[in-house]
Length: 102
Image: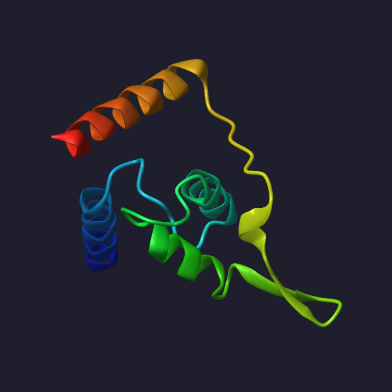
C-alpha cells in the first residue's frame, strides 16, 4: 500500500513539472476549444497551432453526426476563472508575445 502512494506521488509530481498551467490538455474539449479560438486568428500558423488543428480532428475531439464527422473544437469555449486569473493569463500572454518579438 505504501508503495502505491509513492508511485502515485511520483506520477503526480512528474505531471506537475511537465508543463505550466497555460499548456493545453489535448484530451480536454474546453482546452481545445480555447486553443482553436486562439489559433484560428493566425490561420493555424506558428507555435503549437498546426498541432492544435490536427489534434482537433482526431479522437476524442471528433464525433459523428448525421453521417458527417464533426469536431468539438469549433464550439465556443466556456472558461470559469476569476478576474485575477484572467489578469495573470493576460500578463503571461503579453510576456510571451514580447519574448517572441526579440
